Image (cartoon, rainbow, N blue to C red; front, side, top):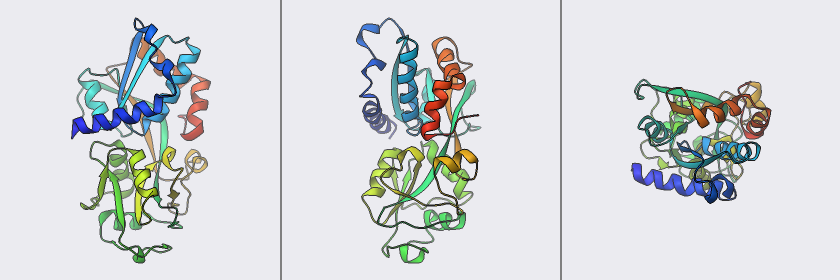
Length: 273
């Protein structure tokens, strides 16, 4: 399973940075390389920040971006396989010691349905009933235009989105065992957008082709996430083995203190301040 997720992440990551060949210029092999793996939610932001950083530091480093899920990123950086493990979940007591979770942004998790089924709103009890499996038909969901069996799409256990979704929306209610597990946000979006009976949850960045359901009367959008009104916001981290040093420290300092980086974060995510 781990190898399969890493392969899926690699394909997705290459798709994200394919338009940015300067991230790994062949002529710059002697330069420091910042390698990253982990969260599929953090990956799009990491790619945009890397692209901008290369333009302002005159391609002073190389970047290599893989995915696979937050747990894989955390495990990889703990084992020294990467410089940075991207994580969209908070630290766990079971994480290896010596790791530093460097917070870089906040992100909204949206509950999404197919555009043919624009559910007008949902509360926490409704989410727990649907994703917990006690409600299995759309005919039982207020405002649904569908009447068939609900098709649940959730993330794999290695996912930070799954961890944050459980903490924010589900509490002690377990996700229905019959839900279809997907290895990335993009695959959740794709599955829901092609299935009129589908429902899932994704990072705000991955909502272009699906309907976002207002949660407790508040839309899942950037404005309401930034204002604090939307209740489904989680943290983004770049995890290092010990305090960041060298090129990684310089890049993380740029991300958290530079106006250009803050401007990029503000386009789809919530800056730290």
